[in-house]
Picture 1 (cartoon, rainbow, N blue to C red):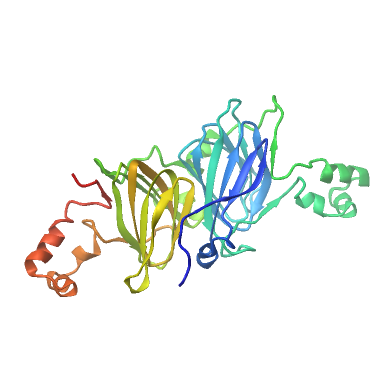
Picture 2 (cartoon, rainbow, N blue to C red):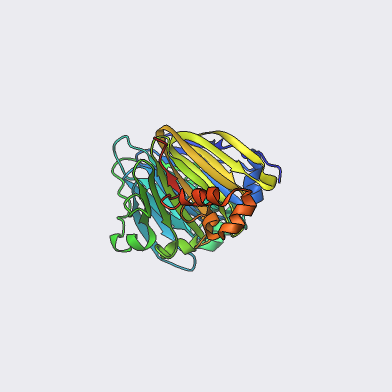
Length: 360
């Protein structure tokens, strides 16, 4: 596998008064197509509305910013719209074929920003999401002829043209003040939305940071997207120690805040990446490759996406390290060290987690 693994910023595909949409192109980032994973970022200005649409990929949305987001969703084989409130830290799965719309219900200046990640096995373009809008300048309604629309909805040709062509906006539109959107269904929010910011930490290390893992065992609706989520906050100069996926799946990292350094080691023990990473960049780590990150002085925060509802991630430098599982003599001969050094090597990991504080 010979790909450029350098972290990439998204490209802006749309920008208007209602907001903007960014995407990572598989032509610019071929590893996305190879691993069949896509990503995008939606920015909604106050009263910004993403027109109803469905996509060719299941995905999850992670709210990076905002407290007044609203999403409406019609799940496949359902005739009921579910309306949910969204705020920073929320994770929301969007199942394959689900119809959805997104709205910033705020009247002040705060944007609602949502990053999307998903697998693209069935996508028209591997490594990218393709959206199908119901209405607007790119809408399905406008694609059918007047004859077909009038026959389908039992109306005159003039009425059919009005139905199909009145909305000329593309992708995102800004609603007029005073329009009242549907109210969120608070009873169902906990079943379909999980706030990972508010969740208890799986690992919390003083000077190291906080690690949280979200799988379908904790949040069953996540199974609809077929993905699992990790959320990591690293303190200044702390390390996310080396790990790899043992089940043949990729890892996607989106840096939400801060800067740092990342190294990836691939086949033949070759270091295939050693570079800086900054907020807004996407990093894709190929299956079985090992990855580690060190935060800069301001710390950093990232969300990581893995395929499957119970991914197998093996660590190299913690008390859960695969080295600790090996017999002492096996480690000794594999590393070509003395028994004393082998014992020292393993003892150093006994009180270590995947988050390592900076040296004193």
